[in-house]
Length: 242
Image 1 (cartoon, one colour):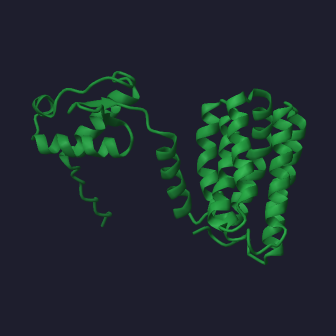
Image 2: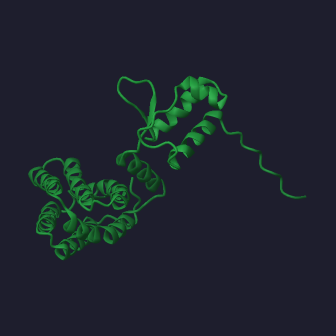
Image 3: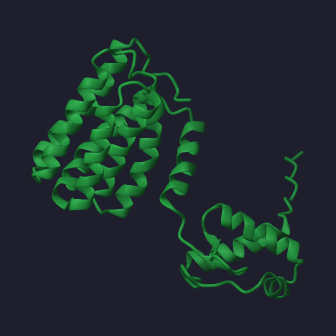
């Protein structure tokens, strides 16, 4: 006897409405800033109840694709914020049991050339963001969680300094995974904070002077140190990140 057929899955109506709107947004027939018709008008066009339309709009709003202007009930098309995209990717990566060693390898591949590009393209505003992150990290020696946040801010500012949207958006989820990775190690290695402060200062100096080779070299050393910190702290690099 042949295998049985799988039951046909009936998709909720709001998902079909959401998919239809998403198609218009992704093919640019609905561009960022465009206003959608009212819920009542969308319900008429789709031939569904207003509650169905409302649920579809809520789903797209949650994903950062729709929003409301202050004082208006109508939805407008928006671009998802970087943080919203990064959060989703980070959750997906965590669910795949990404390990410390995988984060370290990914950082080693991405960060040195990223630092090199940042050194070539940085603006004065980029330098200000990097300097702020370096200063805050050096000034805060008490709270490990806050110190790690300042490290992440340094990496994110470096990514922004590349002025390459593809790099920035692919970079941020990795840095979100760096936070718990570094948090597990930073206070178990006595010299960790001092070495991080030194590396960031040298990378900052290279970016400030537009020395791309030096920025690449110091970032390579910095990421290598990250792995050494885990070895000194006797933390298994095969451990999944929580």
